[in-house]
Image 1 (tube, rainbow, N blue to C red):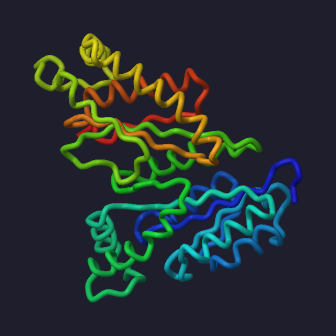
Image 2 (image 1 turned 135 degrees about the vertical axis):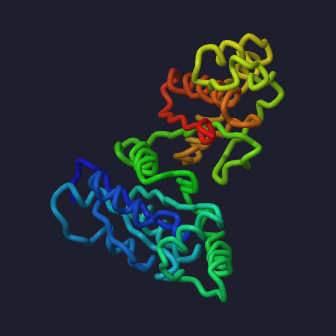
Length: 289
């Protein structure tokens, strides 16, 4: 084992059609030794005995899913064994909306691995089976609106720099309530109480990334007060989350359409966290819609 780089095992799991294979390829490209379709009970043995080139073995990714009968009990047991051996772990769960999964399977013409009289029933059956597994995830990525390049960017942010001292990583996402709330979120802020730039003709086609919209949002004293209170709460919460071993936190900021107020506030929250030394990424789900 390479003593300079502590072993890090990433367990890739999640719903069929949500992007497990793509995630495995991306991690392999950034230096992970990837094993597909491995029974959960074998993960600990793999991490401690597999013989690969010097330095590669320190970063291992294992894909486990319905093909191997993954369940919460077995996965939890594997994580306990890995932690006992001093091995860092991350459980990556890939998710997507049912309609998106249905479309992907119909386009690929691949059979769904779960049982069901119809494709929709098979997807629903697998989602129920994975509910408890999802609870063990450290990182959950909803791929419904992501192309392969965007998925790569998300995984690079989460896994490219695996240091010996793990740090809290925060993902700040803006969204529009009229298109539904994000499937993956730890903390959610609703900023629809602020005046909406959509009703200002010269601002309607712009976004919260534009100075004119940002200035309009923050010319209202409530926006500054909200930002101060939200960041003060995050400054309090993040060290406590980190002390309890939470490695990833997803913050969602929503307005009506997800193009103006939520974008401006998400950018401001992200900037505050970056200035505070927090590893932060910001995404805008609905800005182009």
